[in-house]
Length: 405
Image 1: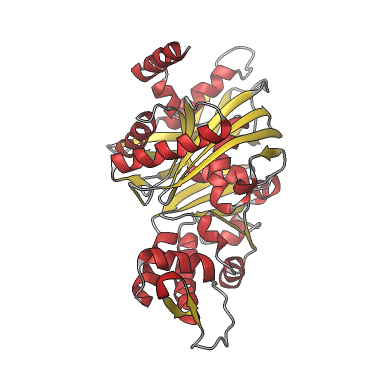
Image 2: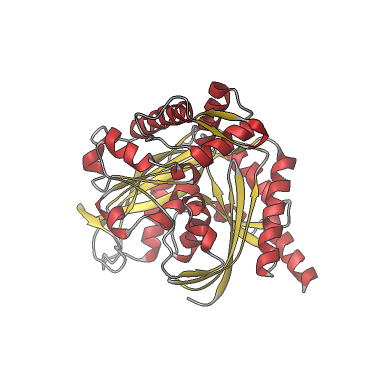
C-alpha cells in the first residue's frame, strides 16, 4: 500500500473524535493527530441541532489539524442511531459464457441482485456486505473469481438508514469544509478495532456501549452476520443516577466515571459516602446499585437483539464489550455471571499503530480507530460513495482544492 494520509470523524452523542493517520501499510499506521471535544446537538446518535453539531465537529477537526499540522479536506464518518436496521439478503445470477468462468463483473451483478430489495420510504441502503458465495449449490465459497460454475449465489448483509438522518450528518461535516469520503456503520468500524480474526471466524457478539446508543454486531465465519442499534447506553445510566440520588446531571456523570462499580462489595456499609466538588455526595452502595440495575437491563436487551435464542452456539467466543461505558468496573464479571458466556472488554488493538495513539487504547475510541482500519483493510459494501461520485459536491471539492493550490 502506498503512503497515504487518511482522516476519520466519529460523531457520537457525547463526544466528537477526529483522527488523522499516515497509512504506510495495513500493519504500519502512524497516528499524526487526534481531536476530541464534547458533542452537542446530537441525541441517541441523531442530529437534533445542526448549529451545535457543526460547532462540535469544527472544534474537533480544528484540534486534530493543530496537532497533526495537516489540513483535513475529507474524512470517513461513522453513522449510528435507532434509524439503522439490517437484514440478510440473497442474490442469484447465471454465468452464461461458454467457459463458465466467474469474473469480477459477475460479482457486481450478483451483489446488485442482492441489493435489489424493497426499502421502506425514506430509507436508503447504507451497506451491502457480501458474507459468502455459492457456486452451483456449493456453499462456503469466499472468493469465486476465477472459479468455474453456471450459477452464482451470494448471501449479503444489508444495512439501511434513514435518508434524512445521514443527509443531516453529512451536511454538518461538509459545512466545516470537510468532504465525506464515506459513511460507515459504527459497529462495523468498532469490530475492526477490537476483535481478533479467531473471534470473527468462530462467532462473537460485540456491544459498543457509548453515550447515547449501544451498537451491536454479530460476526460469524469471518464476516458480519447481524447488526443492531439500541437507543440506550451511558446517558440513561447517568440520568437514573441524577434522578435517584437527587444530583445535577454533570455531577452524576462524574460520580459514575469516578466511583461507578457494578460489582461492589456485597457487605459494603450503607453509610459510606462518596463525594465530589461543590459539596455533593451520595451513598456508594446506592450509586453502585443503580448502575448495576441499569447495566443488567442493558445486557438483557443485547440478548433480545440477537437473531436467535441459541446465542451460545451462534457466538461461542462470547461477548466483547467496548465503548466508553464499558469502562465501568466489574462490567465484564457481571456479564459473565448474568449471561453465562465468556465476556471481555475490548480495547483497540495496538499492533502496528503508533505515534500519537495513547488515547486510542481506551475502549471509548474503538470506533474512531476502527474507521481508519475499515478503509485501510479495503472493506467492501458501502453504497454512500456511489451517490456522491460525479455530483455537485465533488465538483465543489475540486474547486476548493484549486483555490488552495
